Image (cartoon, rainbow, N blue to C red; front, side):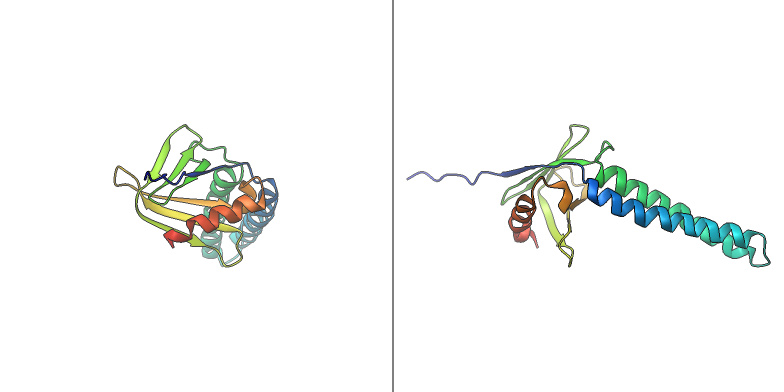
Length: 155
């Protein structure tokens, strides 16, 4: 009797345009508000607060830019463009053509709202890797749910 190996499930990811809109609304308004208040405080005796607010605006700008360009639009070289799930490993294909095999200490984290999940683990070179995936990156909601259910073994 021969045993048939379980085939890996492959998911091709697409840019998340709807999530992009929400992220733009969130990060642009936050950065504009922080910069506006910081500039207003610059010309008052409470000038020290403006340094903190401008720092926070810069921080939110970089975090938001990375999230939008990497996970929503998948434009950066380190952006995940495909996901292969197997019982022994998870393979993430990046935009730059690199393939990252998560083979050790693979952990699956799901958001309470169910719109995002994260994967962390060690690759074959011993480097810790982490990836975030959004519901809108999967072509259909059923593929997103299938990927989440397959990754439950790594919880």
